[in-house]
Length: 181
Image 1 (tube, rainbow, N blue to C red):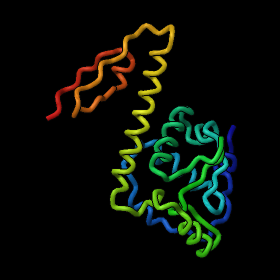
Image 2 (cartoon, helix red, strand yellow):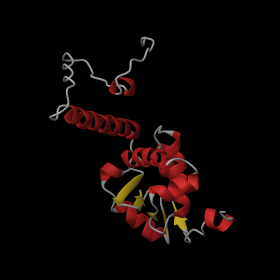
Image 3 (cartoon, rainbow, N blue to C red):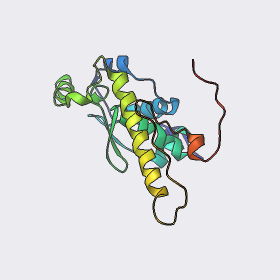
Image 4 (cartoon, rainbow, N blue to C red):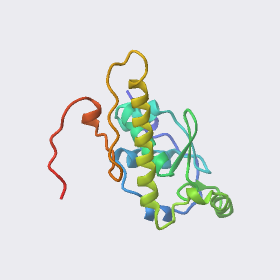
């Protein structure tokens, strides 16, 4: 049986943080927010989080695959950076620090591409998601075309049209969807 102390370990002391980066928060899956809030609550000064997907899943009482989806969304949004298995780093624009100076230095060393306070943040996130989906699709198609796989390759879409592969199509099932207007 879990006790209140084990379910909510004492977080390290943080004395400063700026959280105006949340004003630019993109529209992400709900699990991403739950994972982010858990990471924020258990971070070390400087935003380092030592936690595995399994531990997050247990704490949030969800399946590990849900945590993986949430982490993927956070990584694509550049809110969280994966350093190694079980080691994540929060973007300095939303992490806590021991002092104002430490926090501002961390933000100052941030790559401009990783900043959250840009006008096109939502568009950057959406482009990252689209690129990740494209890479998954190419990886899936690469496996299909490997020896021993008999499914024919899909014909290329005419120029100027988007080639979208829905989850239902990828599973070989049809899905009726009303046409978009």
